[in-house]
Length: 324
Image 1: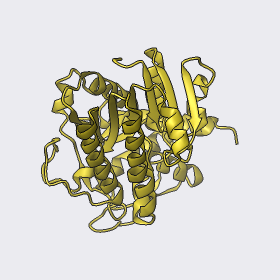
Image 2: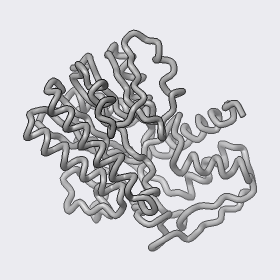
Image 3: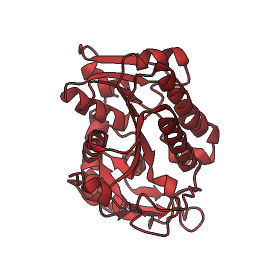
């Protein structure tokens, strides 16, 4: 790593905790700030007593916690956000406050502190909206998100870009596909497993089952995140991070059924909203062009189906081993 002292916002969450594992393995001094609204202290428990690790239970909207977290940090991996895309249709304020407002507070404190050299931000494929070009490259336009979540991520991108140019630090913006893997506690795979554990005969599937998207294993994601941080050169650089293929929701359901060892499960499709979407704002098809990040020497080890199967297997084990 180019940086020794690193802050990870949202570092107790799904992707954040895997990133922390990688940074600690590389010998970095890591501070995590997390309000634990969607993350879990169990995800980072193995590091709590390590001399190179510092955990702050706090929110980016609380300035005192944020200032403490930024002390002496050279780089910030900014992952803290409300990760539930679906929530935006019923509670848009959560995405505004936890995504946009929290990012503004972080940028203001970075500006005032003066020592942060780089911010690495996890954005989302949802900023593209319903792209007419698939696979979708980083320079695709116009960016027209169809969810409040996507809009909030795009707003964060704009703020980070402006602050980087105005106040002289670097920014790396990472537009992630659907990231899956151990410790995930939301998303279609996790939902299917829990539904089938409650009722192994019938599985409700939101939408019409044809929603088709790219899925990337979290290990591949973290590897790409670190590489992009190390090798990006311009003041602001954007990278797509995803797999090179896609998979539909019905096939994901079949994989989960297989990994649970079930047979004869009846699939009941809700029909969804607006042409078979799972919910209002759900992008029906998503596949990112990842040729830019591949030029740095990265490529995913797992395709979408492999990532989904490995995730289903890991989550089933985690759920079954969790104390009741």
